[in-house]
Length: 355
Image (cartoon, rainbow, N blue to C red; front, side, top):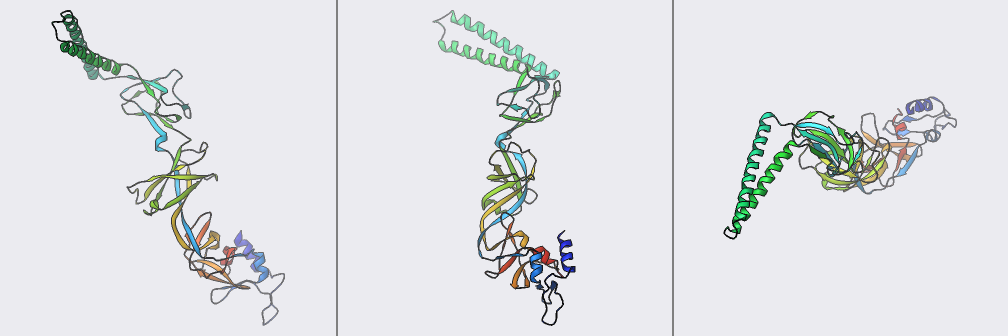
């Protein structure tokens, strides 16, 4: 659309022509031999050219990185099967996706299914522990009747043996009894990976739980020094929601030659989903000397060099090569500009198209 607008403006004579010294022909915008532009005042108004005085100062550097939302490490957990068994529903049935659960709540039951060899070992262990317990109980009863001719230390040893064998019996019985599978934290069910009646293996993940109020975002930075110079950061979602961030930490091991950095989202994150892609702006403690300009002020010349346009005369615009650095809120830091130069901040893209 901007190219079409410029083509129309350049092809139509100006309503108020600017005359050259040599004649009365209408003047149109054109590129001069030194690379600068001649743009008559009426066309400047039609192109809505606006300028800003350059002012050199110390400006905080900003880096924009792509990130994705993840559950905070202390706000997520899994429920796994402690051993092979059959999954049984709790009294209210198996939890559903998105269901809110509370820490310690029973989500399901696991009925252990040991193989034949394990079952034989358990039954043999039960029999042996039961026999040792009964023998110790008989000895304790007999020796107790012989007091005070039997040392108290011997009686105490028998009582310890009885308690120990009872502990073994309870452990064997628990290995055969159904076991509750409880939520490790309060949150909502993020994934259900099993159904009632399914035979599951030991350490198989059955449910995933996250606290949607505590989310984090992870980015990867190719500048390893960035992690030590972060002053502030904020996140913007594709829908335009903005959140302030608090740095959690940075990894000490590179991931695909980049440093992973995690931030905690501050504020109400209830509407966000894990895995959402978002833009993260990181404000560095390091500053750079230069002028703060809108990013739209920087264009490219015919050779592909980045330039800004300085309004050096009433109808003259001169390109200045620059190497901008990212700043905040759609702005860039431009170094090396003449002090108080009038830099085009609106309409620069249209000027760059004049040939």
